[in-house]
Image 1 (cartoon, one colour):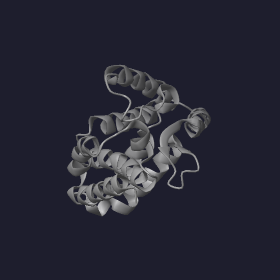
Image 2: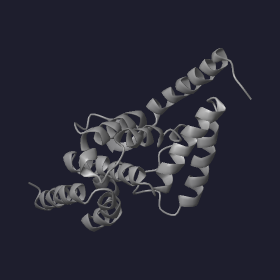
Image 3: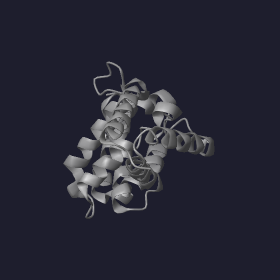
Image 4: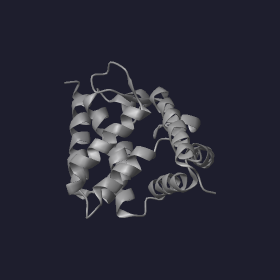
Length: 200
């Protein structure tokens, strides 16, 4: 099927209007100043900036492609909601199915070829097999880790997460994308838990 320019623009604008809903999806992660929780749109923007700033610490990735992956990765939360790392255990299959349905609906608002391209980006992020997706996944773990270490434990404190659990849940994903970033991040984790233990 071919579309007139007017039809394409109408579909593209409908998609962009739908994305406004991502601003209302609240995450568990607080802002660093702890004044409120961040929303999923803010999270995605922050990750895009992480990619622009930190891509030199990954092995030969296309930075723009990493940014694209990060901008689309959480769009499905408009329908499927946010599922924090520490409270989604045992629900993986249900979450995956809900997110797939959301991806097909939301990206389906776009003209067919553009929608397919966006869906492909989302699938690439989820599969985490390309260098760009592996690094994007690493940043998606690094950002909340950093926030938690700077906000009195953030979601870790709320969910009773231990240092060992942090190392196991964040470590392999971040290290796979960038060993040097994991080296720095793991030190941040150690410093946070040492401080939390002493209460200083």
